[in-house]
Each structure stands twice: as structure tokens, then as C-alpha cells.
Length: 101
Image (cartoon, rainbow, N blue to C red):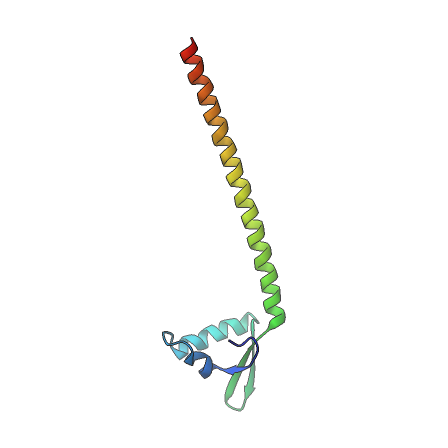
């Protein structure tokens, strides 16, 4: 919404029917503190726009975080499957040994 153009908080809030202006203002404050949006004052108005550089840094972090997390999850799933297969193989050998004897 504020990626390509500055917008006052009132215009941003107007796009959300189910969120109060106060809640939108609080969210903008959090985003501003995180430097994900930039604020410029124009008289009594506060205009907001995306901080593209910080958004790119966040995107890089999240991409790396999810890639690493998914790789760990895959490794864990594969190790669990291998252990399960080894357990099934051992049980099958034990059952075969008791039926042969």
C-alpha cells in the first residue's frame, strides 16, 4: 500500500474496515520503530512510505531463516524415516527368526 507512494495514516486506515484508526496508528508506529516504514511530517499530517532498503534486508533474513528451517525439518524427517525403516527391518528379521525356529 505504501510501497510506491506516501500515504497519510488516515488513507491507510480507510482501507481497513475491520481495524480502528488507533490500531492502524499503533501498527504504523511499530513498523516505523522497526524502520520498515519511513515517516515524513507535512504540517500536521504524517506521511508514510515503505523503507525499501530495510524491507530488502528483512526479506533476505526471512528467506534464509525459512530455507535453513525447512532444510533442518527435511533432515529430521529423513532421519526419522530411516530409523523407522530400520526398526521395521529389525522386527521383520526377529519375526522371521521366531517362525523359522
